[in-house]
Length: 352
Image (cartoon, rainbow, N blue to C red; front, side, top):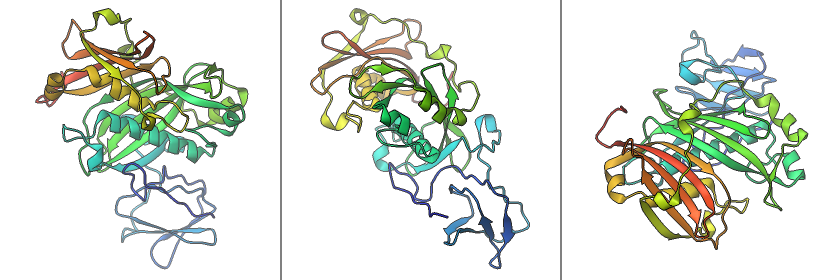
């Protein structure tokens, strides 16, 4: 049985390798008080009060504390609404919030959380065995020069983690129309299990050479269908709908924004989280100092190149001053990103 390895990325715990999955029930006690696993498909996840070691010759040894009389449930990840799901299609990663993940509010930023969402879904691709190259490209996609692009993202933050907090990100795929891949996430406190963030996204495919959208090849569809979990989205679709925005009526404008070389990802386009940062550049500083973002919807309309000059625009909703609408557009008028955000006063402990 091949050994398992991990890579330290963005505050990830070294012992966090994804969702624990056991396909074999061949267990027997060992003389050291542990459990020997044979013929098992094993991916280790951080387990409280246990230590994981890995031996050769096709045997994995789990060394447990003095709790032999207590049943050890090897698959017990909390799913939506606190229900325990024994489903290997749900992938998990553990992270620790580092100082460089935090912003002026002394908590992780919305960009940090969105980076963790992306990192975890890439780990999910890898765990499926379909990661070929690029950001999540499968063998069938690579053969046709196809890459993923983000259509939209909706993130709701119940509570931001802070420095040195241990968090877990769960992700899974859901069906989402003919040419979309639906992705769902939950970020929770690793110690308490409390849900911190919920998120949904849709991915589309684009030809890397022509930069045009592509329909799903049948081969790619076959790669993903076994991984779908047939559940509704975590977040209400209607709550993320964006109205048509007139740039002439936007109240706050920030001009002269340009993507930098370091804003590009390995697919040679501006990373989706970088767009979010530029979109929020026009929010007044005085509002940022007094309010905390807890709900963000982003709709990605087109790519932009490094030599494009962008304009960030923000306006407040007339019905409530705690909701904003956003545009990120090129100086020639082409809309790059549309967005909607909801905010709460920083002194408020609960949402209204």
